[in-house]
Amino acid sequence: MTDLVKNDGQYIANTYARFNLQIKRGKGAIFYDFDGKKYIDLTSGIGVNSFGVSDKIWQKAVKKQLKTLQHTSNLYYTKPCVDLAKLLCEKTGLKKVFFANSGAEANECAIKTARKYAVDKKGEEYFNIITLKDSFHGRTITTLSATGQDHYHELFNPLTTGFLYAEKNFESVEKLVKENKVAGIMLEIIQGEGGVIPLDKEFLTKVQELCKKEDILLIIDEVQTGNGRTGKLYAYMNYGLSPDIVTTAKGLGGGLPIGACMFNEKTEKVLGYGEHGSTFGGNPVSSSGAVSILERLTEEFLQEVNKKSKIIFDFFKDKTGVKSITGLGLMIGIKTVKPVKEVIKECMASGVLCLSAKDKLRLLPPLNIKEKDLIKALSVIEKALG
Ligand SMILES: *Cc1c(COP(=O)(O)O)cnc(C)c1O
Image (cartoon, rainbow, N blue to C red; front, side):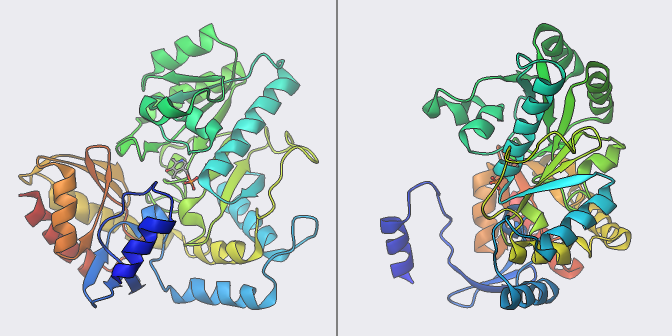
């Protein structure tokens, strides 16, 4: 086991500051390390393991496909990606899907689509995309450029040009639209990495109206907020929005890599033959797993998500050690009095895994976490908050 840490240090690129924890196996929201110590997982692999680990239904779907056909390339028809696209369209009312392998790639597709739309409709000088301060859209050079946080940019210049960063108020967005030639506005409904910051309904509605008026594409990045995480299938549904493009990834695959860029009637035909592609995109195994996730995100199930959300919000209300609590569904940020790093460390020592987002404690438990495990974990957090 110490070999694992040593070899990781020796052979894996130094990009991750890992916690001192070697996870061996798990079931649902419970992990075990190599010494058999038990942990309650409130991270779900950063919003990926929607139904926890070793989920039987997902395993069955994945195993079945694995034994049938693992990959063909996108030169041929395969069933799982079509089933998944159909399900996504039926559940959202969107019209078409492009499959990628990650959140960043899904966003790349959205950005390409917005630029192409502008070329077709308004002229190629309308290439600008507005994103928001504190946003996070990925780590490829272009999605890094889309990310409205300077500290991610510094070491990697020159980044892709044509991104403008607005403050989280309508006047700022409107000003940028007036002063620039704009193809799209891309935003997260709740900024995840930026600190679990929900955007308000009035702001979102006004941005949508502006997009309609100016024929600018509204792109919603649901990589983290999507697939039941916020108590609705997609977070934009909490506010009755109708975006032109929706991207998602993380929780969609239930643990296997997949990304999706979804188009409405306005954008479904923008990309044509040869204008975008991916070797692995829509992979049969990932797609089969994703179908088994999406099929279970029913109204009834989402009510359970919201019930557990309420348990968390009620629990931390007026607790000493808590400055504020934000989020929706099972995507929750807690501003702590104590430094968040210390809180996370203490929780881990007491067998509970949590995330941070900027200076907040971030909770993203598996959507099907058992209520009794959740409540146990909350009391551990309470102690760690001091
Ligand atoms: C995680 C995340 C991404 C990037 O997804 P990857 O799969 O890591 O490329 C993009 N946008 C948001 C909102 C995210 O939370």
